[in-house]
Image (cartoon, rainbow, N blue to C red; front, side):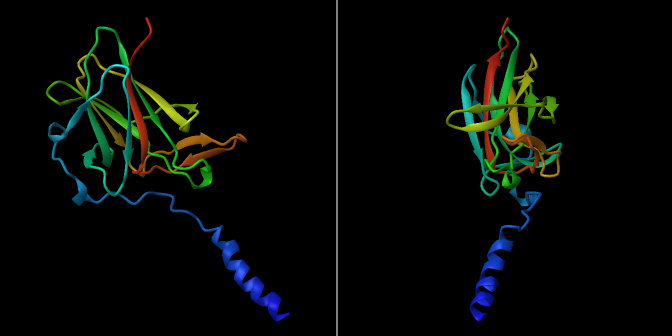
Length: 193
């Protein structure tokens, strides 16, 4: 009898540990992490047409700036304008394939002119599902690039923003919490004529 008592005492905490709830909202970024006072002070890397760049953000080490949505991690790029209409494709991946414990970096985009003044700020990520063999499932969104845009900033939505909804293989929908850590891919493409 004592043996079963001790077995149950040791098994119950292990079983209940699996029932622990996860933190539903990412810890807000501290104001002390803001590294730039304006968008003009940011460091911009070039993004060529049809070149895909993957950015891995980390909430503890990535650069932070103030955006209309609040504080966020970011990556800033310069782009060349083309006579044809071009779009910016952004992909983002969930942190885990097991959706009940996944988070996702929800990307927003801000386009700037040659003087690095904001000409368009897109705070929505209307996306579709996709999958690649090596990287797994992702959410993908397209943003039309304004003709006068010469720069863009891809930044994380606030942890308080609306969540992206992902569907599991059995069709169940999950509202995935926003995170400041995650991976995105950006690519400038021409629209087919």
